[in-house]
Length: 100
Image (cartoon, rainbow, N blue to C red; front, side, top):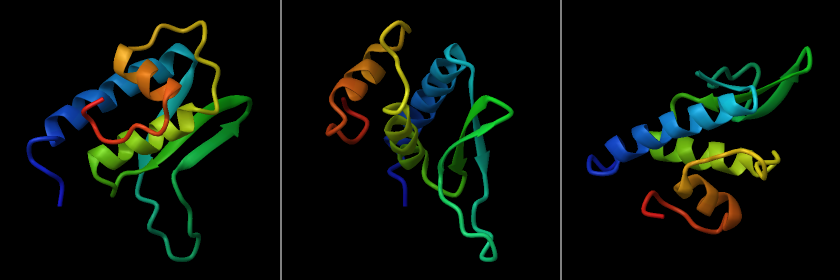
């Protein structure tokens, strides 16, 4: 069960991540990935040359933040302004939780 104290922070950070993704023309989609016939996980895909990040909407907001940050490691952020907390996590992916 999500911690009610961290949920608002996680939701705010999700908005930061969405804004950051837009800077590189990456769209983040949230979907229910529970189809037992076609098991899928959160991840990236490219459709007609456009990058997408698909995140399982059943995950807690905090876990969604962690998933997106893990995926962001695949992209080049050197010339893009990102919030300081995102930059810190991209430069030190071993950090976990929302307090960094």
